[in-house]
Structure formats: C-alpha cells, structure tokens
Length: 265
Length: 271
Image: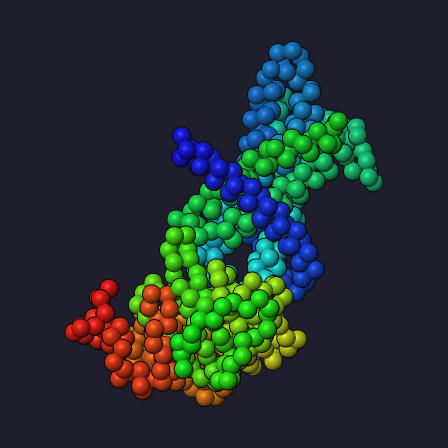
C-alpha cells in the first residue's frame, strides 16, 4: 500500500515538474525568437523537417478523411434527401475541427517524436552539456527554431489538409452521390462565408488555423522538453519519445476542446 | 602541497586565501547521486598554467569533479572556485561568464552530429564573436590544422573515428580561446599511437596557449607525458598528490596498487 502511494506521489511529482519545465521552456524559447534571423539556416532546415517532409502523409490522410466523411455522412443524408448538405458538413467539419486535429496528430507522430528523440539523443551523448559549456543556450539553439518552424508549419499544413479533405469529399460526392463538383464547391464556399470576420476571413477557417498554431507550439515544446529531460542512454531516449507523443496527444485533445469552447460560446 | 586539509565552508563568497596562485580550488566538496556518495570532502588546488592530472579507479567521481567545475553539477557541500569566482550554486550569469573561460573536452567528444567538422569548430566563433564568415572559416582552418584535421573539414562527425572526433573536439575547444581546459578521459578507447598523439597534443596546447589544464584519465603514459602534477582520487578524496616524476615513484600503497594494476604486494585492497 505504501509502495502504491509512493509510486502515485512520484508520478504526480514528475507530472507537475514536467509541466513546469515545459512552461518555462516555452517562455524562454519565446524570448529567443529574436535570434531567429541569426539562426535562419537551422530555422529553414526545421521548416523543411516540420512542413515539407510530413506533406505526403498529410495529403494522403486528408484526401481519404474527406472521402470517408463524404461517404459515411452522404449515404445517411441521402436517405433523408439532404445530400446537398454534405458540402457544408465537410467544409465546416474539416476547417473547424478535423483539419487542425488530424494535422496535429500526424505531426505529433512524425515530427514531435523526432524532436524528442533528436534532443534526447543529444542530451544523453553530452551534446547539450557541450552547448551549455560553450555558453550556447539550448533553448535558443535547439528549441526556438523547432518552435518557430512548428508554429508556422502546422497552420500551413492544416490549410492544406482542409483543402485536400474538401477535394476528397468532392470526389466521392461526384462519383457516389452524384453531386456536381461546381455545386459542391459552391456550397462549401457559401457555408464558410456565413461568418466572415477580420478582413473577410471565414471565422471557421481562422479559428481552425489558430488552433493549429497552438497545437504546433504544444508539439514542439512537449517534444523538446521531453528530450531535454532524457537520461539513461537509449532506454531514456525511448522513454522520452513515448512520453512526448502521449503528452502531446492528450494536450491537443484537451486544449482543442477549450479552444473550441472559447471560439464558439 | 595537496591534498590541502578540508576547511569549513566559508559563509561569505570570498575566495579562499592561497599562496600558490591557485586558479582552481575545490574545498571540502561532497557529492552524492541518490544513496551513492561519490565525493567525500574532496580538496583540490590547481595552479595557473599547469597541467594537472587526476588519476583514480573508475567510479570515484573524477568526471563528476570536472562537471562541478563548470556548474553542470552542484555539490551537496563544499566550495568550488574558478579564479575569484565561486561556481557552486552560482547565478546562471556567473556560470556563463566562467564557462566563457573554460573549454571542456568530453569523453564522448560531444560534437554536434548534424553539423560538419568545420561548423562544429566554428560554432563558438559564430555564436560569440562578430567575425565575418570568411574570417571564421580562416580561423577554423587554423585550429583544424593545429590538430591535423584540416583534411576532414567538410566531413560529418559520424564519418570520423574516435581519435579524429577527439581532435576535432579539441579544435572546437581551442576556438573558444579558453584559459582553462578540462579533459575528460581524452584517450579512452584509443589505440596506443593515437593515445600518444593526443597526449602530445595536450602538451603542445599547454605550451603554445599557456592554458591551465585538468586531465582526468586512466591512461598512465598519457598522464606522464602531459601532466605537471598528478593527484590520485580514491574513496571520494584526493589521497595523494605530487609532481609527475615523484608521483611515479611514490610509496603510497593505494597509488602503488593502482599503478601496478592491482599486483602490488601489501598494497590497499584490490578493487
């Protein structure tokens, strides 16, 4: 019994400490965004890693998500003679929730785990210590470029997911539900244009992109923080990577809920 | 002169009086990792411009001692001084300042894996100077030539052998223009020829740049070649310290046992 409470206490302590370190890391790395120009080469490399490399996966997942959504929803709507609504459902569903959420999950698995593993390996092989001894802050040298790259790449990839998902839905609507592509796309644009704000930008689109921005920051910070806390060789790096993926997944869902309630209530 | 007697930790942060122009001092340092007590009141004093070798069995806290000097670890008790600055529990700003004067050669070399050899060596210059890229490049060539690694300038660390990595790491250390260099097992895992090369390099760096060095090693030929004085750490303390020549002929039982590889009759308990 004592062991159980001891384990519980240690787990809670680790969780609180980890959260504190992640928040501190976010603040310190944000302060070093001013170094972005100086580290533009690393930043571009990270933009490639975070924004271009996951693109094929994002495209495939987005296309098939749009297609599945159209197929599942369209068949049901067709039974009630409301298949015309399919375009609105896909457009709004993707832009508001599914686009940012799916993109964030793909990036957590592909980029967030990579960030944790890279920085974790640097930590256990004393490269982080070497940077500190050279008076180079890892928050500026390693974390900031990843943070900025993810904050830029996630909304961009989310926009790509939205567009490709809508096109996937269009494909299924045209072939299986016999809705003309022009009519489908017109309905998508109409449904998104119902709530225009800030210079004519559809609210459903920009709230989705804002969510994606926050998710990008979460993935970069959680991955970096887990990597910087890695210890104990290859096992420690594996543990850090696993923990980064799980924490990011959970945080994305929880934060996603609160952002939705902030934007739509 | 060493080991100097442990003195109680001073309540203020004034450097301890020392007549030997000590650049580095550790006074009564204790350090534990969990239940394992690694350092137990260690005293150490390193003079300006000398190469100070630390020998001792594995697990006696030799590498830990180096990390305490640069503030990568904090002692549980005792004082750590570099020049006139107290490093233990120091503010981050003080640590940055102290680290600016120290170069650290890691056992693993700790080269940044995704940077080329030239970028690794030029890193301290790119970060802390306003030199133009061509000037950094010129200096990188200079430091790489000193360690005979100019031909590998555009290679990645993964393409280098262990000895080559150490030499590149040493070039990176030199690029930071340190006044103190800490070597953590610089010859570990290297063949005898490469070991002799590294030892000669350490000696030549000390002569050419006048740096103060601490060399942690298990390698006796390297210690004799590079060191001015040698300390033997055992049981978390410096148990014997002398000039390199006298150290080799000491009668201290634990040292004799270590030097003879545990074959010395009547020496301290074998490990």
